[in-house]
Image (cartoon, rainbow, N blue to C red; front, side):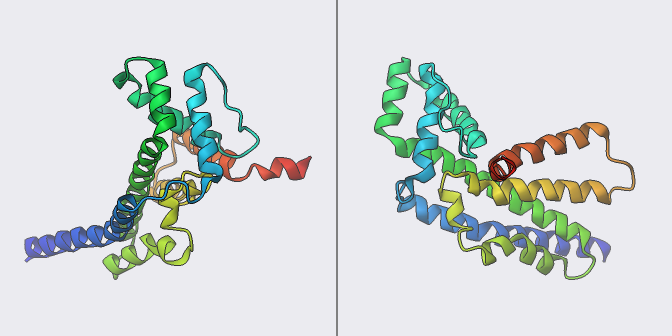
Length: 213
């Protein structure tokens, strides 16, 4: 009987995970099949150009906007493709003439980040609840996509605002899971949490410096 219940519970968890990831995958796949990369060029276009800057010996220019983490991630994604080109000129020319290739990479990155966040959210809630585990986990993990007007479109727009759910929520889930443990949080993890919050704050709370000035 116990084994049967375990099998049923496992199947329910798998169905729940499928229901969590399905809306995200459907929207992303539909948008990718009908792309419009320049529907909102600000700030995506400038972040794209700035991410290319290190490859021609330049530094980031668009530094008065909260996109430095986005620019760094973009440069890392571009660097992953660099070995496949014969020269730096060919590399630069390819992406300048085909910006959709860059934005496809960024959209895959955002898709993976959102999927990971939704799955971690689901698993965290399902293990924390004792009643209505699956329903509660489904409801909370998809709440962002239900309430926020630009939740789905954030997966296809290369902007600092697109990190709110996947990065910000993951940090909060990490903190929640750590505080549920009976033992103290290790200092190294506290430092990592602080760094993660600081990086996200750079992208989201830059205007505080303007207010202070």
